[in-house]
Structures are given as structure tokens and as C-alpha cells.
Image (cartoon, rainbow, N blue to C red; front, side):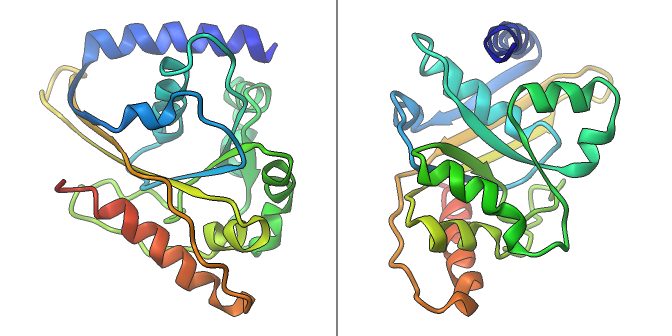
Length: 205
């Protein structure tokens, strides 16, 4: 089922992109070609389909194969009819906020088995371009537990028309970051802040 939904989603979203989205700034996509795990993909959080944007460009840059990527998603979306089924079949991972970083242990296992995990360090969406959220400890926990490299991605978009669903879109892939592992788990927030800073540094580049 994953393989069927994978290509169905790709071509559906590909068509959507061609009609409604003007790709005004795309950079660093070559970093997604032949991407290998373990890898933590970390992105700012501008909207509900940020995970789909990331997934789409991964699929676009690796069209000769299926990319197995786990996207960390709010658990409430898994409770919705059809959407919840779809997220499960697409191997997304539900996370409940406020449950502690240990809720990410299944994603630690994925990374330790050379998997690819996407996480949004801010947790909550920042709907306005000028907003920047506070980094949560989760991404720091994944780095601390697995020593995995981090690939930062910056996403931004705004609607061009009041009446039509047409957007200007920015998608910037940075360089892979390796963080010195802090042996004190109390410093997970420090790692998370470094990751989030590397994402927003790409805003004006």
C-alpha cells in the first residue's frame, strides 16, 4: 500500500504544484538526491502540509526509487477519518505534545537502523513569515540518542491572490550539520536551538 500511495501522492501533488504554486526560490535540492540514513531532516513549520512539501521534493529528486521517510506529525491528525488512515499508511509517526521526549524513542530506533526522520523543531506552526517559534527539545533528543547528522530545510510561502489558491514558494535545503554530542541530557535544548538557528539562517541567503 505504501508504494501505491507513494506514487499516487507524488503525481497528485506534482500536478497541484504546476497549477497553483510559483516556485520563486528553490536551492540546494541536490542535497536530497540519493539521500541516505541515518538522517534527521529538520525544518521550520509554516503550515499543515510542510511535511508534504519535504516529502515531495525528496521524491522528485529520487524518482528512480522509493524513499522511506518517517515524518513526525501531531497525533490529533491521526484521529481524523481518512486522513488518519492515510498518515498511517504513509508511515508518519504520531506524537503527543507534553508527553516528554521519550515519546520519540520509536524514531530513535528508525535512525539507529539507518532511517530518515523529519521533525519540526518548533513543534507548533508559525503561520506568519516574521514569526519564529521556540525550539523544543525533541530534535536535540534525536541527535543526542543517535548521533545522526541533521539536514536543515527552510520553507516559506505566501498567497499571491485573495481569491485564487496561488502561492509564491521558497524551499531552501542547507548543508548537512554534524553536532558535537553533549553528554549531559539536560542540554538537549542547546542542540535544538543550534538546529533551529541553522534553519532560519537560510531565510535571507
